[in-house]
Length: 171
Image 1: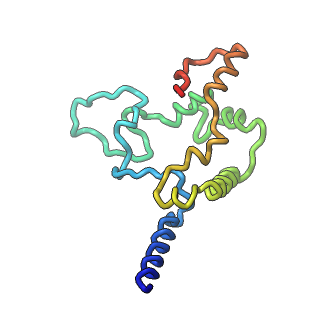
Image 2: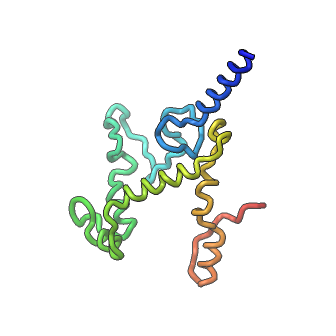
Image 3: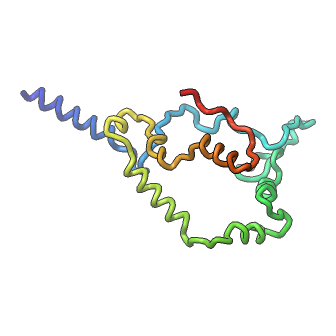
């Protein structure tokens, strides 16, 4: 009888330990990775790579700063969004005016972060899914996902030129 109670207690402790997530909030994307950094094959340089003539003359890396393949990342982004990169320091006033033409909600980042945290808590998966680290991310956000093929068809019916798209998945 005593052995059965010990086994039951250990089983309950293991089950409860599997339900925890370290306190950082719900983890919906349960993917285990053995690498400590980014996958070097997943990084695509925006400009062609060039071999320098003298490797000893390479500058020190500047994380978050400029580099040899993308010396002006902020200016490139402003230009891609239709702004004027040479308009002065900081944000381009024309770009900001265009983006904020319908108004700005103060504290929107905090609002979205708190709403998303609540959504992840409400859609955290079942007990066994949490216990075995099953990926529940796609099921949790399924109702909010865009149906790419339906949207592509909708725009094409309206006569809008659209870029080519991958074929629909085989079912």
